Length: 411
Image (cartoon, rainbow, N blue to C red):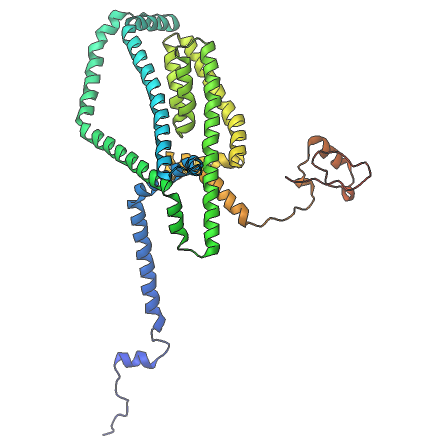
């Protein structure tokens, strides 16, 4: 009987090792481990960022406030004051201004509440007469009194529900108070120990990087100061304009309301404009509906004037930023992190623009009709010239008498 000469069977491992095409590359396992580690680290970073979002916003707000008061603190420190004392003095000045502001508004609120309670029956009569004359209805106080119990029951239900959530409201108020104290604490240390903090940061960097970091820090302080300066100017113009309008319309508490409009509309982002305009309209409504309507129309008109004429010019001068870019930065900041982002968008955007302007290389622009930025009279003169003889005009648009080449100096 013939014997079989088939080779003996080999184990699978031996087959894979003998066949290079089927063997797993040695780097593949390392690649899988590296990819899995990268994904896990990225997911962990996102989770940590979500958990620390509140703290990061608190630190960012504190840094912004420290930048805002640092010019004044530096001015006092250069005159022999200790930075801690100078920072404390700035805190006291800001607290005093805030106390005066809220004290004046508090007196206005108490006075208006007292007048509202005392004159409530007369207001009801005026409102009923206006509704009857306008809409041809036959309302009377008796009709309102018959429906008053139902309205009172609904209000009581809402108040009961609000009282049931008093624990949640108290916890929220306590959290806001804690965050406010945290902002003050971080702001104080970032300003009082600013040089020590910057030395600590620079000690981790080589000399060349230290110069860049200090230059960036100086720009951020300058731009933040420009932002506060622009807000203060806008608040001043707004307060003066609204005071004159309210005084001419004989609205009570014209100076207090003008102060409210100027401060709230400029230093509270997003909703500040609506909060600022509501108070004068309500106070004017106590005098007459016509006066309230005129006040509302003036507020809307001034808001358009400020948004399209006044604010772009002031922002462009103080922050050296194009008005369209400034408006876009505010929208972007509000969309990313809410009201705080709208508040911080302009100084952050101005600082980034200064950084990029220092590192991005720019080139001379070739002459072309699409790049002409001369005034209308100069543009017409350049258009009439033959294409090969067009020259750039100088900054004032005047021709040289000796026929020399005209050049425009770009500021």
